[in-house]
Length: 297
Ligand code: SF4
Ligand code: SF4
Image 1 (cartoon, rainbow, N blue to C red):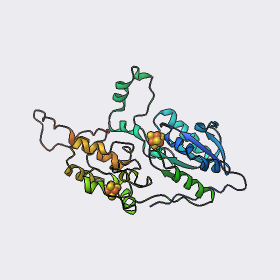
Image 2 (cartoon, helix red, strand yellow):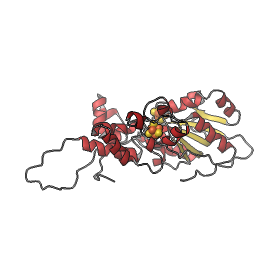
Image 3 (cartoon, rainbow, N blue to C red):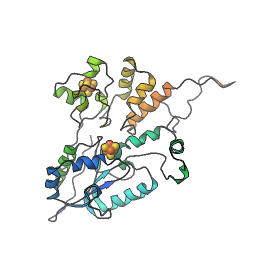
Image 4 (cartoon, protein in one colour):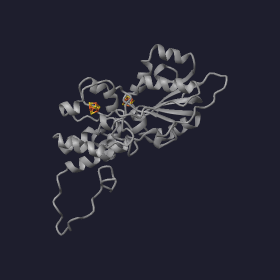
């Protein structure tokens, strides 16, 4: 477990807080706005210098703490995140988009150019990177808080710690532990539902199992997730290979353990191609859907 670094020493003046948006649905910013009185209390302790959703716009302002929502999906965003990094002393990326590429990282499993051509009449007008990736893949990030959307309580707790000069605590437990602590009935054991709780980090309070449905992993992989084993268990429950792959193709498909499971089970779902005339059996596997050539890393 890596601890986030200590927050920057700010001195006597009020800390400056910025909230930046990249490719996203704005849901994580909205969950911050929904904090209501807690947000007003925060605004009394910091100067909010940029938060477009709240009507405060100065994206070039220097900030002590920058909250960053969204993934890097375009060349313009690649350039802009470097500028945000250079003007921010501490970056906290919030939500599945900023920490793992978000729902838009589903295109990383296929050919981005094909996707664009199938959606837009003039694909040559679209400027997009071949993959959608996390903020941390482009610049150093001091802390990541996943979730779709991010937990407002976790963001406020992290900011409270930072303002007190302490390193924020992060969740490490799996959703199963949270489920057990709350005394909830296991939907995997009792109903055979393909629950992702055994490999997902908590932060949601085991919300979905608490409502009688399976976790779909929106907080992303926990530490040391046994994803391959759980995927095999889903197969034993009766899911076909395509359905197993789809379990890992929600908001966190860009997180490596989930991406690998989706890729491998999509590969299993494909009908075997007839051997080419004269081809030898046991040949090396061909290119994968994500463009790589390995099969089981
Ligand atoms: S993590 Fe979810 S709620 Fe947050 S911006 Fe991305 S899609 Fe929206
Ligand atoms: S319902 Fe899901 S998260 Fe809860 S204990 Fe069972 S497998 Fe784990």
